[in-house]
Length: 241
Image 1 (cartoon, one colour):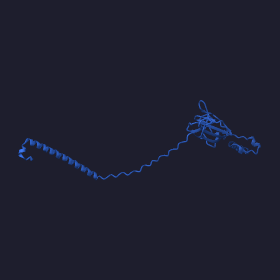
Image 2: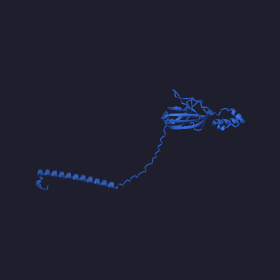
Image 3: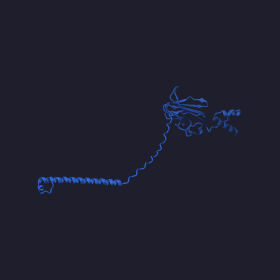
């Protein structure tokens, strides 16, 4: 039905319908226009994205080689590490001959001490068990010293202060052995042991002629201990002079 018909153009009902039709047509047109604009914007965006060059993929960087330090070997437990010659009156290590090593010649003339003790160094500081220290001099085996708590000393400690015993070291040769035992008694196991030998001399000692050198030309000095051999050689030199 055409809206140009003069009959219907004056009809109020027709005019109302016509207005509604025109509004609907306008809304459809607007919707189509918005859809068209949105479509064009989407197409433009797609074109823009297609024209952008692809970014090069980042090269895989070589993973940095981190050097892992080798794991230190676990330190052996309950071991005798060494010996320290102590100035017993001061409670400090002597000024020389420390640590006390195997074959050491200790010249008391060079030391700042008159009384001594020997500390046994262990790892850990307190071992799981006891420390038995045995000293031998000129073939005489002294009663072993049993130490159950650190610090461990060859000549022991004085109760209750636990200060080290002040002992003398006569000139001569010594053997020293420290043994870590699992416990006291016959069933105790030896966990670790360490032995050294050393000699004690006095470089300022005035040597006098022994009577045996005066009347025995067959005297064999090689049978003497090392320290005594040194003194014997000095005596012979004195006799020659």
